Length: 300
Image (tube, rainbow, N blue to C red):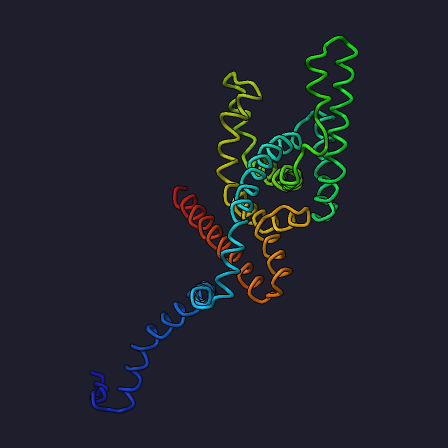
């Protein structure tokens, strides 16, 4: 019989260190993983927001700037929401045109997307608001004069009464943001529709559905569900890019902050407050998008 190897005593310091290292290593690794995955960036943003809130409450100049700037908050929110609704509709129609087999629709949709994506957003906003809208108004007036000559004065008078001064800069800003973001949303919708297997369309058509019915009842619901996080991210981007409409003298928070800074020369108070307001809005919306994305992933 082989000789038994004596085990070291439990009091052996070498064995104690080895056992201790074995028992503590998983705990250290787990703690390190938790620390590395912890959202320190979110804690930093909360600290910035809390610190700024404290300064606004305790400092008269910051409090005055905050009260002054919040007067434009409703314009920022309303402009972003209305523009995004129209951009969604325009993007969906353009996305359907991008995948259409109709040569005219496909090329028109592609032309629109490539034009918008090839021009800087600031230039587009100026062009649409100061060139595009007046051209549309002139076209409406021309149609109205045609109706008057055709013996339909009621419609003609209604159309010719439209003038450039009647279209406010707020409306022009909404049109500019809608047209601009419609092109980006079109690509999101196109990618979402193409992510659905072609077999589902073929199965729907084999059941007697028309192309429109299959798209409306089978393809689009699944595609929209797939692209909801991307649509949410684009809304966050629109909220930030809505600051560009301040160059059209729209009294959003950016324009109001600029007016306050120019009047009081308190640039630090104005732009720190403005930056934290945008940061709070965009981070809150981004968190909602992440929650929605996790729910959609969990439901699958």
